[in-house]
Image (tube, rainbow, N blue to C red; front, side, top):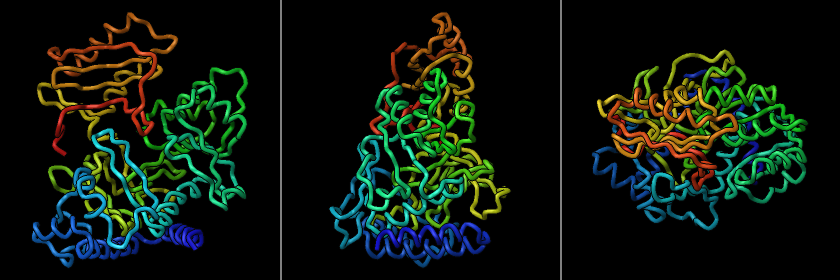
Length: 428
C-alpha cells in the first residue's frame, strides 16, 4: 500500500507543477488551513503558543496570515519531543525518524509516519525525473553513513535503486567504487562531488561518466559547479532542503533559480519579523504541509535565501528562489557594523589554491582560518591572505591562520566553510 501511495503522490506532483499559480496557491492555502487547525487541536506545543498569542486557527486563511503565528525554533522542538510535539496515537517506533546533525547545538529528531514519508519521498523524486533521470538508471549517492540503509523490494529490481557510498571514505576509494558502479546518476554533497572531480581529473584514465549530477546539502559555489561540470562534461543540478523538511527547492534544466515545492511547504523569507519583498534577502521560515505526525509550523531554519517573482522559461508555475547565500550562521559582522555575506569570502579566497578551507569568526575582533593547502599552495601567500582579510574586516581584527591536513566534517558529514559564532548577525 505504501509504495502505491508513493507512486500516486508522485503522479499528482508531476501534474500539479504545471497548474496555474492561482490553483497551486489555492491548494497550498487549503493545506495550510488544515494543518494549522490540526496542530492547534492535537499538539500541546502549538495549542499553548497560539492561545498565548491570542490566535485561533480560523485567523489563518492565507500565507500572509502566518505572521500572526509565533515562530517555532529548534529548541522548542527538542524541549517538547516527543510528548508535546508528536501527534497523539503516533508510535515513534513505527515512524521513519531522521536526525539533524546537532552542529548548532543538541541533535534533533524528526518523526514521519508512513503517509508523511511517502509524500516526502515523492517530493524528493520529482526534481530528479524533471531533470532527466529514468526509472532504471544506475544511481550512485555519496552520503552520510547514517543515511545508508537496506534496499526496498522494488529497488532490488533496479527501480530507483541507489548504490550508496560513505562520504567519509577516502576520495580515491570513492572513485574506485564509482568506477565499479559506473552510474548514470551521481548524487551527493557538493564538497564531496568537487573532491571526486579533482581526483578524477588528476587520474590518467577517467572511468566515471554520469549523464546527470545532483548536488545537495551544502552551498554550491560557481567555482565548484564550473569545475564539476568541466570534468564530467555535464550541467549539474543543485537541490535544496533540510533534514526537518526534506527536499524543498530545486533547479530544473533551465537553471533559472530554485523551484519551491509549494504543494509540500510554505517558505517564508523573514527579516525583522516581517515577510520580505521579492528580491530581498531573508531567513527561510518553513511550514510543512504534510507531516501530521510531527507538524512544523513557522519553523526557523537558519538558512537564508531571496524570493523572486520571475517566471522560469520551463513553464512551471512553482515559484522561484533566485539566490541561496548560505546559512544564517555564515554571515559575519565587522567591528564597524558591516555585514559580510558568505559570497564575499568565496570571492576573496578563490584566488588561492586550497584543497579546502574554513573561516570561523570567533569574536567580533578575531577570525580563525583553517587551510588544507593544495599542491600549488605557497606559504608566502599567508601574509597576503591576512592582509586581504584585514582590508575586508578591518585592521583591528586579529587573523589567525592554521595549516591543517584536512578540514574536519560536521557530524552530518557536511563541510561548513564559513561559520560565525556571533549571535543575531544581520538581525534576520
